[in-house]
Amino acid sequence: MNLLNLLDKMCPETNTPEENDIFFSRRDAFRKFGDMSKKVAMAAVPLGILSALPKVAKADTASLIGVLNFALTLEHLEYRYYQMGIESGVIAGADAAIFNKIRDHEKAHVKFLTEVITNVLKGTAVAEPKFDFTAGGNFSPFTDYPTFLALSQAFEDTGVRAYKGQAGNVMENDVVLTAALSIHSVEARHASMVRRLRTKKGQDTVKGWITDGSRGTLPAPTQAIYTGEENVTHGGVNVVNLTGISAAAVSEGWDEPLNKEQVLGIASLFLA
Amino acid sequence: MKNELIKPQGLIQNANRRQFLRTGSLSVAAAGLIMVGCKDIVDMDPMPTGGVKLGSGDIGILNYAYALEQLEAAFYAAVITGGYFANASAEEKTILGDVEKHERAHREFFKAALGSAAIAGLEVDFSSINFGDRMSVLNAAKTFEDLGVAAYNGAGQHLESVDYLLIAGKIVSVEARHAAAIRDLLNPGSADFAGDDLIDANGLERTLNFSQVLTAASTYVKTPIDFSQLPS
Image (cartoon, rainbow over all chains, first blue to last red; front, top):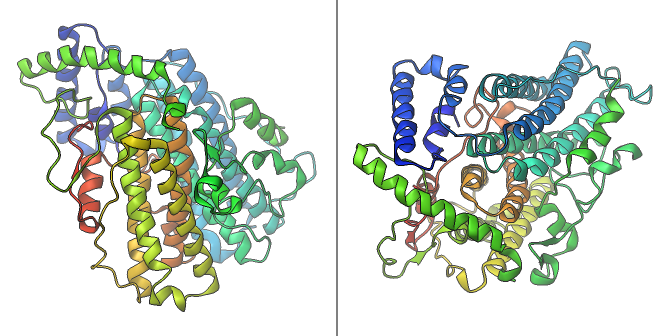
């Protein structure tokens, strides 16, 4: 996805034909600019132009800024964790490609969310908090590789649930919703990879997907990340009763959301 | 079950949105501009003979998801009865066996949720896939999973109901988990599980619109799918 495509997908939230015309002519003008200078258009510029469009932001801007700052806090945590892990040398050489890629994505998410909050929504992006990845001296992720992998899984599975829980809060803004969904699936890919890596190394028996509400061999304080994942009823339909497929398999087929308070409760373990 | 899923509030919002877009599209047409990606209020031709018509609004989008889940479920049903699977490694049997159950559960869920609004079963065409060959099966699985993720990510913005959006969100992350696992089977230990072919410099995954997805899927589906009432 790129932001030019996002512009195409936006619809004007206007009351008059005149405002609609302004919307489409500005978008058209921007697209022409983008065609002339694709490289530039992929950087910060498209974000700036969004704010020039009339009444594009359908939801309350303050609310959007709040949601995105919440997401940014989590991305800060993830980026710092992987950056410190890479710098520490704890990561096995054979797994470097995986964690360099994950780190790059988290870094890009920090930059992207900061730009959207600052340049599009004209808000103030939260500063990076001080983290304590030992959680008060309980973990040693930067000297013990299995611990590094365990916390990585915890952060990625939390990230998936966190973005999912916020989708409804940004759904009135198509651009923000689509961006959030496009980060959400990347976090899910990370989660799947790290979970399987741990099992391949004999540290757990978890699969790429979450079975029931199980945290596997993760430490007890991480249980809140998995509680609720055992749900098998969606939209009023109990899928086990419907299909006869086991509850374990059905629970794997749907990931569950967490709300902001639940996520911050988990993240607070790692705030200094 | 369908009634449990529909919120009156969502229907009212939908009506309002359609009303202003009716005005909007006239104005845009007069200005000679193309309205890309916005809600289309024009009723299209009746469904083609022997085909299915997805319908409009959230129901149309749920039928779109149902069509994709039908395709995936049919694919994995063929995989687990094929020659490659019979001799696959324990890890690959576990992954593909799990994914088969997940996709079957997704398909049956959408069928039940849509009730009488559900499209008919699609006739698939997997003649291009060799189910006795590991690479053929895993590459096809990669195509289907990546396509599913991009489809859900692209469709989310068009849903009016927050309940449907959440359900789609619950499923899309599992499709992404599948996609990453399949990609890692094909290229173990690499960065392909979340490759640069799908994820841009902002760390955002590819989205595809209805037309792009159904065009890609059409290689594997015999039944004509009329999606003309979905946003273009």
